[in-house]
Image (cartoon, rainbow, N blue to C red; front, top):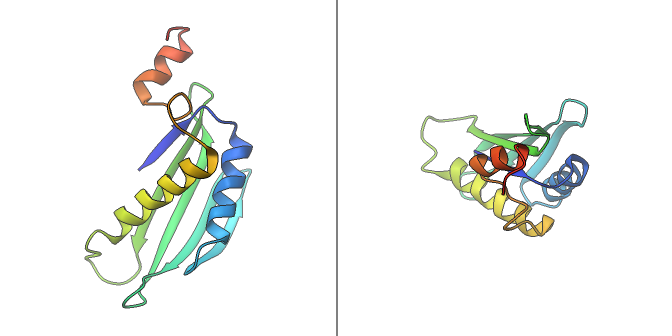
Length: 119
């Protein structure tokens, strides 16, 4: 799950790091801006299960900033939607932190129009 932003890479990268480091039950495992990867360990609220989140920030084929997230449980097969909700909440917080909205969050079909000079 992810987003494409018409916001510079470094702005999105710093915002992701800030949100990760200011979250309860989230521990930054590693970050590498050259590779565009942030690794996080999350602990669930009720049963204290450990999950991992990988955040990838890079540029897409149109030069726009692309953010992709993956969250997976380290224990158990069923997460009852926890990982999907975690990613959705992170994206909403990131959008708010960036002040992103119409014109800065790019739908993939809009990115092609922008790259071709349309829109």
